[in-house]
Amino acid sequence: MSINEVSKKSGVAVSTLDNAVKKSIESWSIRTLDAFALALNEKPGDLLNKLQPNPYTLNIKDGKQTIQGVYIPDKEMYQQIRSAVEDNHLEGWNPTSKDVKFLLKNALNPNPKDMERIDRIWNEGR
Image 1 (tube, rainbow, N blue to C red):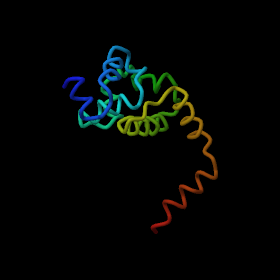
Image 2: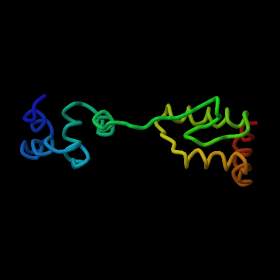
Image 3: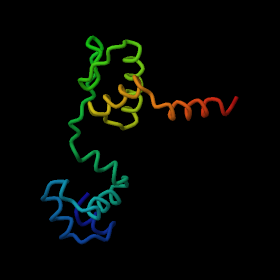
């Protein structure tokens, strides 16, 4: 697809699009990204994900019981946190070590208010 075709489909000037493609994707305006997405029948966010490199790596080491470098001493808790992290990672979440530390902290010392809310949710249908 040419710049001219993108321009015709999106209504964005050829010169604007031509200037944008000479620069890194990080410098593109939302209008420019939207123009290319429209012309390619893509959602802008999906197109951005395809265009940007994704250096993220989910680092899980079962032998060391670590997730993103965070050691989880209790094996059962490790498995539970690992499952939650992997499930949500498949949905697009890219947890950092800070996120894993937060999960571990809350697993070790759950907030009583959160526990009450969870109990209410589970018991509503009974």
